[in-house]
Length: 170
Image (cartoon, rainbow, N blue to C red):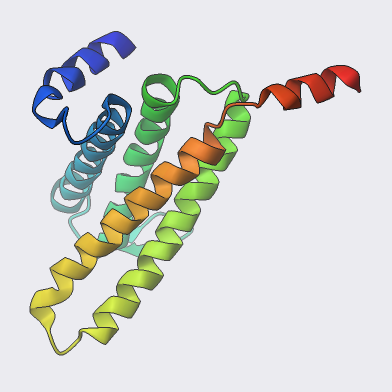
């Protein structure tokens, strides 16, 4: 499966060869695909699953938009983790449960930071509603860069040789 996904992504890589490494292109491609999957999940949930303004889950009542966003996250987050673990950051030697915990931590940070930064920018630009989409793009690009660095250096990091030797000596 990994090889099939990489073959599809790599097919589109040649025009970008001068500007970006294959690894970074693959990260952007899988991230973009996951984003698109999340948007489609949100759309499907909003227009076809949740047809009332409020959605009653028995223990909690959510607005239609929030319930649809929940579906988006329930689809996109596991997909993103699996693609990152098994397609993009395959060099990591960390245990899967450690990677998953770190990845979920990143998702929590992303959700919170996206909300805070977007709210801040929208309040700052409230007199210029046409710029709201630029705010969303700026926040999305910033969070994608942060996510890549977080995942590369923390979530799916590679144990250093010194770390292995220290464990052997203990």
